[in-house]
Length: 89
Image (cartoon, rainbow, N blue to C red; front, side, top):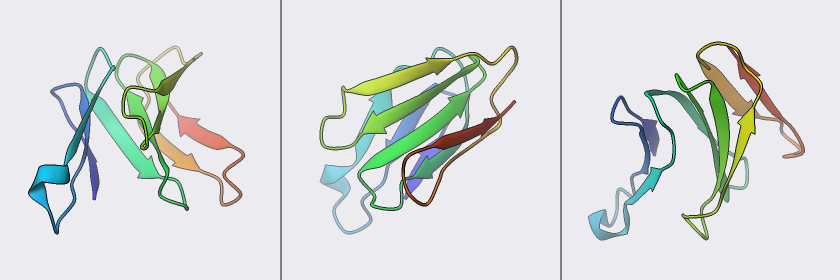
């Protein structure tokens, strides 16, 4: 399970083993939308800081910040082929 929060974090919840939960930090404002890639190796997140981030789950500190929105990002998703990310602001 993946969640975004007003505490500016993205969290990956491993239901079978609480010790394996991940907290991903990098956004500077509330996180409004999150989505797993179809292969479950990446997460995309959108935030009130007007950015989209793509997180590589094998290396929780590695992420790509995408800028360009002029307002809060409220919706994000991966394409089925994992080659594109769509975001709505």
